[in-house]
Length: 326
Image (cartoon, rainbow, N blue to C red; front, side, top):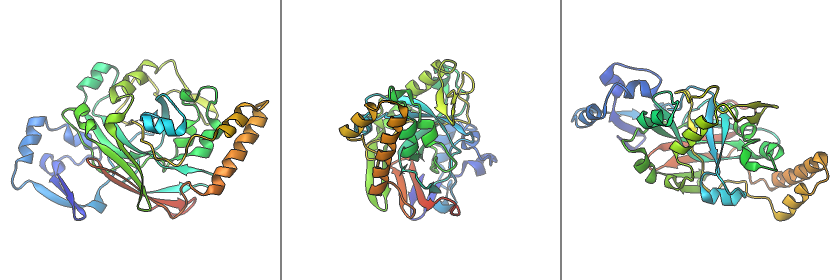
């Protein structure tokens, strides 16, 4: 595979196999590693496709598994000192996307390495046997919703994150699905970055994750029947049954450089020292108003580019709520 000059040059597995499924794994799984090596050696094999024609490679489901503060530097900047999991409910989008800046929201970006699998996972053994596909993804969120709904007594519970990070345009996915022979070795070499209007905001190494992909999967399966998270006024499990289906992705977390930072000590003291929940919410709204006034969060007209040395790119345009999708 070769990227450059506005095009992708690679072996067209659909043409070779006669399979044109919208799910990349349906095509990839027709070939074992030896067959793929043989195709790569074919002198006449590669063909070129314009980059603008490439679609996102995310799975088809709406419910996904996400890791929060899974990079130490990001945990430090937001005041969290342990990695945790939460559900994200969004359809995987495209590598050229729009994200709506809803009035009153504090819209923030995160670039992540996402993973999906060629089979249902019910155990660690299933994970070990599965082919693992990695792709670049974005995890957009509304920090105002998060601050209003987070469990202040136990932020690592993950409560509040599903509400803040779910939505129809919050999960753009890249166009490249990389299926490595050795997933751990592959991730050690992956870097991810975010630029906003051409200015770098994030840069991280995937090898710095606290919980690796296997740990995220086994934790999800281990708590499948015993743990729930707040969402839309109720409680939901991470997975509907004790299994991770092929329709779900794992978002493995982001590095430092996001807009949201740990609130100042006086803000935290005022919120935690409030006499009741009403007084606490009043302090929270005062803080959110001051954050909105800074205009440091994403605004209509901003352009966000997520990129990776191996996983390609995502270009997202921030638009006003109700504007036509791009």
